[in-house]
Image (cartoon, rainbow, N blue to C red; front, side):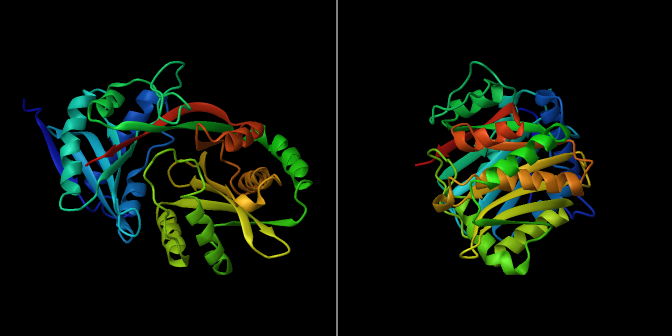
Length: 357
């Protein structure tokens, strides 16, 4: 049966300064989807952020698939096809108008996704679902850790043959309440690793640290729990670090960094990153990468860099009220650090994978 939906595919979304109509429409759907489920749109991309992201096609080809019902945009699929590494994979995210039937929208968008990957030998599709409310009963991933709420969209993934590989927990920190606790935890943690120096900065990575940070960023693709997600190691170098950070700047996001350097060797052995979407949501920050090299764990460096970075954030961006972060439900070590800092679980999201033979 004809759904009456019109699907369009967009390789460009304009510029950060002048987002296209497609970017504006996608941003509205993204916000509506998040608000309907969570009561806020802190996780939604703005039109400016979408346009800036899609302007960078150097290491991945990005395509935005939109579904329209009449003149109204009612769904999107944000598609990424890596070009440097993981060339076997299509990565995508769906966002749907909450007033429309999920399965009908997803069927229409899926046709556009397949069109975007047509002619390429990519056999793996990975999709992270939008965040959903916490539940006591639901879909359990193959890792056995965490639960995902049963929704029409998640049932569509099951029907299409996707497997739920992993559940991530989204946690939120109220910054003002956490500052005193963070200072105490940082002081206590410092006693466990006196052979390390912390260095903090705002914005792009200093030139002298680019190679070290490229190694840290590459390790993020291998040293965090991934379950059976078919992710290959990412290839990072100084140019990729700079390219990634230039996109963040175009999106209007401030990067807040703290690293740990081993005094005896001068090597970077731990890092953490906060991102602040200053232009769109100045009261929000996102806790992104945190990584301690395996051979330097056990010195509470994860706590030290996170607590120090929180203090730096509060000093430089006193208007930030809450920080959101995401961790695999089986990542007990990092979840424990977050709980000690004051993060509380607020939602979950699932990683679905389809391997096409």
